[in-house]
Length: 386
Image (cartoon, rainbow, N blue to C red; front, top):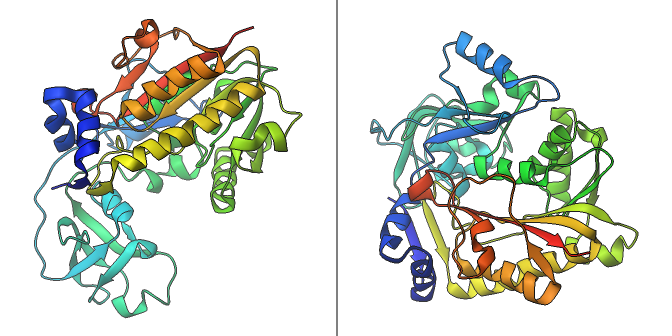
């Protein structure tokens, strides 16, 4: 079902990673992970309590085998969708959420002719059906109404609990976050009294996790260049009860060493913009190899600044939700050669090792959708030599 417009050079780059399994990787991109993870806000509650409450309401939920703050809901499907003859066209991001059972909200509607109460199919711009539901609004009112539910989804291709409708979400007890992303916070392992900088912090998942892991005893600075994203991050941190525990700034993190020259960190989190080739499910995508090369250089700029603001002996985590060697191992290799950073062995390991002949390749973590049934993800732990 997934429509991928990747040029031949990008396909070749993926073959460097997956070889004969490249087609398996590509075919896995339109499927969600087998587990939908959320992080328990351990400053307010415990995984055991949340699981007990959810199971008490008949919700199937489990605790992760490794991370104590991680719980997950099984993702079920794929299911057939009842045809209706009426269609609501959703944009890419909205369609990918609806595919997992989320309701379709007004901002995600691209078109359609329907009236409130109609049975409708939610479709992608390519007219592929992802869900069945009931229209909550007239199509003629879409331009006038800026928010709210457009379609109440009753049947979707895949099924998972509607996290944002749970009272535990509304009370700030849980936060949707992938397992690899939670691993990053655990590798940072912030301690009381440490200064921790999250360079590309929005939407705030890792930032909030750092607050919880440090028991609010670390000094945490979060940066993002977008005012809209910063505002959303502050709102999310407030929901979790963490707003007063993080200093949030709108800034281009590539220039922190200049704009915040006083800033010195014990630990730095670098999760820069990337090609997002590992994000699943992906109903359609269009990218070129030239995009990958531009992003690789862009990502290195963040590491270059991180190396300037971290203290001697300090740690930097570098992570991306993509899979190309150009955005992963090659960026780390540049950091080693040009910045004098050292790849260090993490305290624990999940996933697969890196794809490089360098001796530090075994210290890297990779997650592959078709192997681990998680988003595609890359993590490296770097140290500034004293």
